[in-house]
Length: 456
Image 1 (cartoon, rainbow, N blue to C red):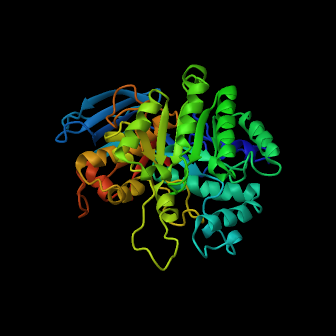
Image 2 (cartoon, rainbow, N blue to C red):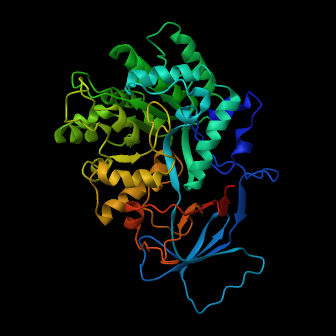
Image 3 (cartoon, rainbow, N blue to C red):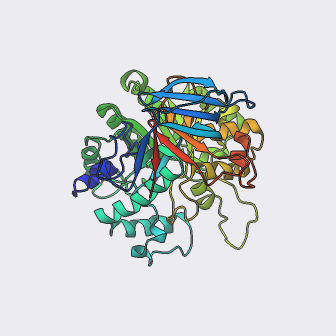
């Protein structure tokens, strides 16, 4: 939706940011190569990567990777005695650097990023910090949006994400997600606008926020309509769901599952997937309730996305701010959901620099590092799972790849992040994936479809 909205105002976001796959509310199709006259981002094709370390392979060895048609053609042990002559080929010399699959934003809001750092919105600063204020401030900001403004802030987010080695994302643009589509005056118009947007080229996902509706009946209507629309137009489905910690309210996740089954999603929607975001109410579940939820989901292709930077800022506040030293975290315990209850799960940054999430940046690896503490997951195995959640699992959840471990194999897409983690110039070496999670390096090189991507 981001690209199409801006195109209607004469701005071609594909040409502006062609190194990223957009999902907007998402598109899973790779964008074209960057235009030759765009000097902001340079791309250099690489045919072979020499002398790099790889995850889940012998840590005492380094490896050579040959690329063909934007994919891995072969992976072979590196022999330091063999001289590599370039000829017409471009070779990247890793010198023992650590190479991993590139990173992914499974859930990020493109249109309302960096509102707190943009002078245009300086009067809309946080005073209370609660959810109601965040909705109000964002609604006021959106009334001032212009194409130039959206492009400027969207460029910030995309370029910072590329620098962090993000090569695909599900980017949301609201039409309008903070307004009800059933329980408000003029709600029918909102549904009409949504249907118009869904039919635009490049839009691959129907997204909705049932919790903005006035009551449970309207929430269910919202869910049913979104599912029907996704099936009708052949789209993925994405819900912001159960974003509260009120035990007296029924979790809407059960209605989502029932409605998907009643509509035979698996048979009628093909390979399209469902993502459920936030779901803070589920953090109050007992172990029995989690197992029951898994049994109800069965083979329905549902993934959960935790959004810890937003959830921790918004959820678990005491009714009296002067009281309450005990605060519920209110963010999904994604590693436990994956390992103990066998759910599909990932986590993402959600918002950056606005009233919903003033803190954080565009680097999923830094988010994963924070999550070591949030999830209390500090083993090497935990680190591998956390990395998978910001890379291969995240891509699979939004339809940008198959669910797999971060072990690279022949035939995989040539989308990589390379960390120069050797002990050089007196720097402390980082010799494992766990160390990259514990203390993410700033310096990294991004490869997208076999090209080194460099920002100004």
